[in-house]
Image: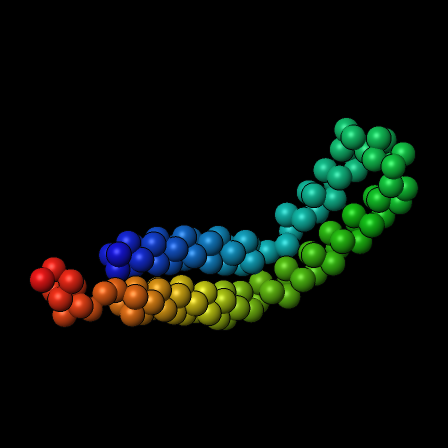
Length: 120
């Protein structure tokens, strides 16, 4: 059971590391590619249908994209520190959960003397 727990912890650490790498790549790439999203939002084929249901959605989308672009520009400078801190917290959480689950398995496992006494 311990092997299964630690294999799951190792796989989750690997997945967490890949996600941290992707976040770092996204944050350090810059915010210039957001201009393409604004142009794409203006040419969206379903825009007329959405206008009928949610008036003013384009202005809200443009404001949200501008805010996100500014946030990514600021976070781009702090990307290495932020990603390392986030990865460290997630890694500690995964290892802590693995240790806790191993402790639970060890405590719930029947004692060897009790098992031997039952066999007699």
